[in-house]
Length: 383
Image (tube, rainbow, N blue to C red):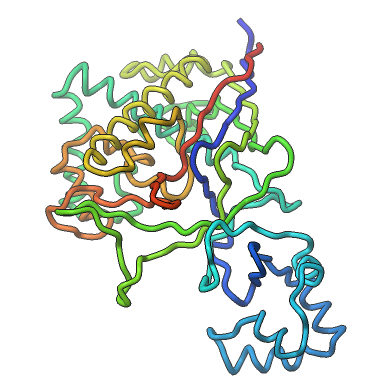
């Protein structure tokens, strides 16, 4: 048997995808809107420009006086500069982002992660995080279906104990990761990230086929109460999160490597569950998890028009901002009452309202779209 298995994988976005980086938010200090585009301003290019035009003192003075009300575009106009495409591309190092909606009142937005060359990509760590969730979900679902008593004793009751003991929220259910992934002894180490059996799975960063144009879209928060409604600010306006996203139908590619070196040793030490033994089994885990997730969302949206999106689109992978608590945990396996307890403890206490009760959505015309959905397929496997 070969020591490793390698596959080329393709991801096609089926709804807007956002993955954030170190910078969680950009403000009017850092961008200018002109026409249908937003230009993220380069600090270095702006500093060079202000120095050349002898405007550094004036810039700093206005920045200090206006504080959060400072607007870079207004400042440049006050100095008689015409904000045309040529100037803005110069200040933004040639970068611009398409505005999907009228965003004249936008005050800040969440930028998409980019590599050192300014290229949008999907980090391999983010992809692996989704796969990790899918595998764990399948392992626990198998335990629940084969022996609900074992599932209740070894999983549900321990979660309740964590809540009753008021464990630090960061450490909440940390035992789950240690027992199902890190509970091994290998090369003199035990129960640590060094003995995590998913070290066998190596995933490269995913890059798009050719150049792509990201866009900034308004994301709203849809809540299921007695009637469907949007979360609103004190002013009565919808809560809107302006977010830079990869649009639909963009293709990314990455490589997956499955190292078989330690598989037999890991299997020997963890006899309680059947871990996937190859890439095919891993992708089967992803498909089963995604189908259960889609069914869960359809049931949640039974009386909402967004249910049609799930009926009309084929997808099997969800990633990034807006995926929600259900997509990033194994809460689908738990009862509604236990989901409420977890939500009220680890998040905001919403009492007896359904858990989770809200979804981040993108509304285009009258159509509602969920976030983060993709179709993942294996282009080819080799040993």
